[in-house]
Image 1: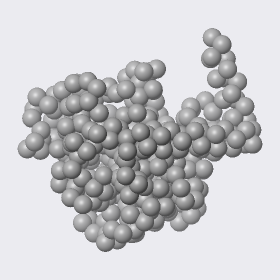
Image 2: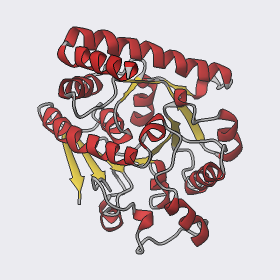
Image 3: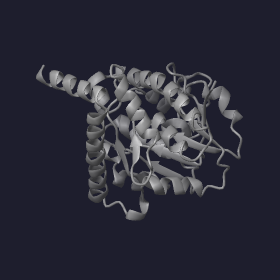
Image 4: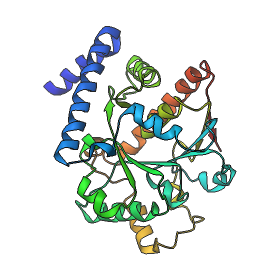
Length: 299
């Protein structure tokens, strides 16, 4: 009860005072970057494999692809019908399981590489197999301070151009605190990208922030705001490396993870993530339109 009251008071202070919000967000920035570098040191990750925000943008700029349109791939079932619209000249950002349907994006983001349970082993092996055609295109490991990315597992399972992102968190999303949501989103979209990459609410929001620093149009595929994932649909054609048994195991455990949100909310944590997108994407659309950047959810 005491902790709930304390959290309630703190959130209201942050929500109602921009000054306190800025102090708190700066505290989170320092804390999470410190944790990130602690993981880098403890895992002996080579410096040349780490990415600051500035280095990430340079890496994207180095791609020979056009820098007008960025396509971000999500996991909603609609992607089965829309993915063929992506032009080969356009830049593509992959995320999580999108490698199952688009095996060679220009860059791919992951934040899970460990073998704690049988489900973790399945996921890790599946991620590795789905990205075996990535070639020299970068595989970027984000949220390494979250304890779900083990460098030893990355080295033993992912024979990719692995990069480890220096990122930091912003105040947590909660639909009750509208000012926190708006201020965190604005801070993410206005970040200078000199050092760390801001992460907020949902991986898709973070990728929109990255893409907005370079591209004038951001197309989002498979962002259905709920419903089944593409690999849960009967029309999904399994890649040759994915057995029906493994696919069934994946679908049975698709919501399961070891995040703090899952520990607290269980399967409802997935709904919380969807609800954050429903609230934040329209705000991001309106804000980026003023900067001449278009966000389009492809359906």
